[in-house]
Amino acid sequence: MSLRNSWVRLFSHFRDSKGDGFGRPTDALLYTVMKDPVTLPTSRVVVDRATIRAHLLSDSNDPFNRVPLKIEDVIPSAYPLAA
Image (spheres, rainbow, N blue to C red):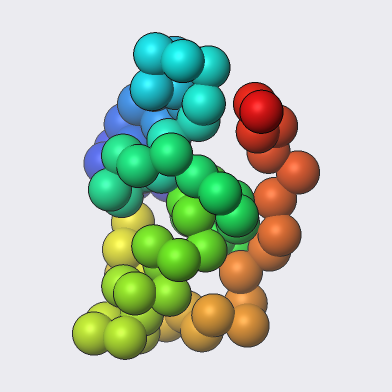
């Protein structure tokens, strides 16, 4: 695991534990509140499905480790979403 990937994972965990200040977890790319969280299969980072879908329109790689990625490859996340 690269140093950057380790930092992203640590930062994502810290930020997600804090959320947006109202207990709602935020996306690792845009820092928006997640509505449909998914886990990227190779980097294991949790992002919102809409965010990764938009990213994949212009770049077909995982934004965290540059491994090729298709929207069909993302894993639905059991990430807890606050109401």
